[in-house]
Image (tube, rainbow, N blue to C red):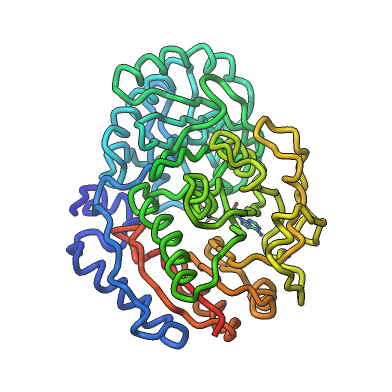
Length: 439
Ligand SMILES: C[S@@+](CC[C@H](N)C(=O)[O-])C[C@H]1O[C@@H](n2cnc3c(N)ncnc32)[C@H](O)[C@@H]1O
């Protein structure tokens, strides 16, 4: 892939731009294997899962610069520290990483910015209203469009411009399923603020993967490479089923820690939902209440509320030490609160909430999925898994360095399968999935 922004030095986000994709993939795979050399035997590795090298990103975070009349949507000038920023930035609407159709949508959004008189925020002067726009395209080609605003000053003007935006986007074949404004009054480097104002459409964007309609709320996390994510979730479910069959010990219950909107959880539970053999009881734990609420919506929609439950809380505190009860305890309805829930409780009042959603399972599960942020699961959760007696762990990691550290802290497990999923072409980053079973 070639990029004129990269060649001109305007954007350096893609460190591997210009390196042939086959070489990128081979190098990345070798680098991850080398990093995990001590924990993953050579025979456990499968060949890496490739991505399209361009047009793979479903999500754009575009910083607004310029003026309301002529907005630029892209990045701040990389030469300038944001605190000394003079309002200049580069327009990256034509970035080749975005999925087909997103660029046309960005142009329609720019016209809405002009129509609503949204002056881009100037970091140095602390003037202006629009900080960025965040756009996600679903596999059904519907959009979630978020305007990140400094204050509510231009909210009514934006609201008035939204019907025009929606009809323009519908005309382009990428209708806006959800339009919101995020209020971000703080002068800090975080990309968005805590308050989301719904402007039009549904509360969630439907992200259908492998026939499962996951629901994404504006502040929930979703993997940025839809096609590779589809394969990641399907592979995780397949490996666990294969391990259960090979060992002759069915996996009845699983926990999905750092579950987001429940991608792994629903893929594990789906065979049972379809009347086959599989994981009958799944519990997801996640700090984002938006993500948990969206996951509950999906569970209700799939008729799985009760069998697939979600709780808002801190995954590093899941797994009380030293307890291993039979998984039948889950299906017999025996549950008790554990310290997994000591933070981030939410009212079970959402449409999709099940009465037991806030209760942690009493029994240890037969398998745990962990998919943490770059920092990894850390020593506390690694130690708890090490001592837990849980037969299988599926670890999906976007950082081989923290993965290596975490695996070193869990010597009770041996890696049976491992594979690199290239979620992030043109960069040195990769997702790695490892299936671990008790040695
Ligand atoms: C890499 S994402 C994975 C999400 C999900 N598994 C998926 O496939 O989309 C990591 C998730 O962990 C959540 N998270 C971060 N720290 C957490 C913690 N201490 N406990 C629970 N969830 C956490 C984030 O909100 C985010 O949704």
